[in-house]
Length: 190
Image (cartoon, rainbow, N blue to C red):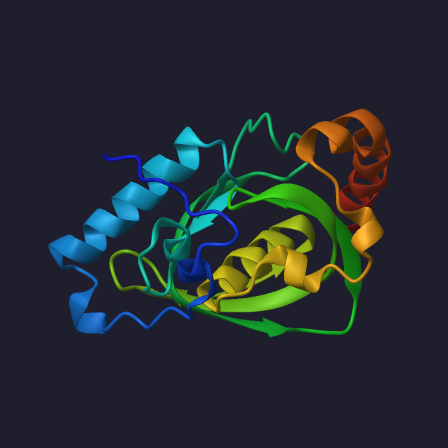
């Protein structure tokens, strides 16, 4: 599998809304190649997820996976998930502040995300899924689906004083964030 270059903030391609994948095209070699390249690129960069727009492909496909990720040791595990044409629906008004990072943006910052969402999507075989996601996993879904709409997490940062580089986050904010978010994860179970 080919590892692709991840586009970074400032590249206008990141701001384009992706187009839906036609059901008849899911099994095609070009769509399956994009999926394989997304997986390889996400894993190579130690990401928790990656949207097709981040590699310059304007189709509504995102991949997510969290195992023993050194970038996100506090995140609950997510098995490898391929989401084609994902749709998110908040289930209630409960929200949580998540200090997010992004492979396309060399910063971190606090973003308010829905805690409980329903996701509908197709997998790489065209099978329909309708699932409820909670907590940080719900946050990961919202982050990746934002990319498919041309939205970066920094667009959702209400307080710009929470922005920091990864190095500054690790030095000044990481421990407090991990303590707070671990308590949240333990409280809701995901």
